[in-house]
Amino acid sequence: MTNPDAVISLIDEAGAAALSADGPEAAIHELARRFFDLLGDRTAHEREGGLKPGERQFFVAGAFLVTPDEKYHMLVGNRGFPDEQRRLLVPIDAGHPGWVYLNKRELILENTDDHGAFRQYLKTSRMGSTIFAPMFWKGRFMGQLIMAAQARHTMRQSDLAALKAISRLAAALWVAHDGPAWLEAEYPPSDGFYVDREGVK
Image (cartoon, rainbow, N blue to C red; front, top):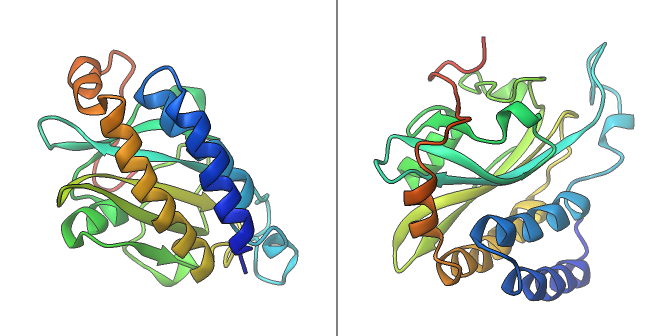
């Protein structure tokens, strides 16, 4: 279970750093790099069935922000994604990010093998466990925080609850740093890595 005191400390320290950050993406990164280090069962890969042959435990985290034309989720402030995917763009209603967008609620896939609709958007590997928490501003869906791990059952309900709390702060920081205007200027990105609904081939 994620330590509640550690989550409070994360929100305090990451929030202070993000408020002083140089722009909206830097603010998101201040949050992402901290919950990347905190959330998830760090022993999940040691359990039987956690990893398949040839797999290794690793994590990714960041935010998917809705693009101004509402056609894509664009990766912002990531940790752990390949460099060429720093501007990953996923069709707005595709996969489980699309489910979060359509349903406007958080989601956990403790074991992605149990979800036939799961799509691989990470270039390097299919992830085994993942969580999503939507970001809202005055009732408007702006995007979502995400975290995933290679090992199945890494993400737990307590991790989802923590990410949901952090997503509230992320939305406020995004707006405070004028994230919507930044997104207007950045999109479409010159280094965009576009995937289709079915994911990475």
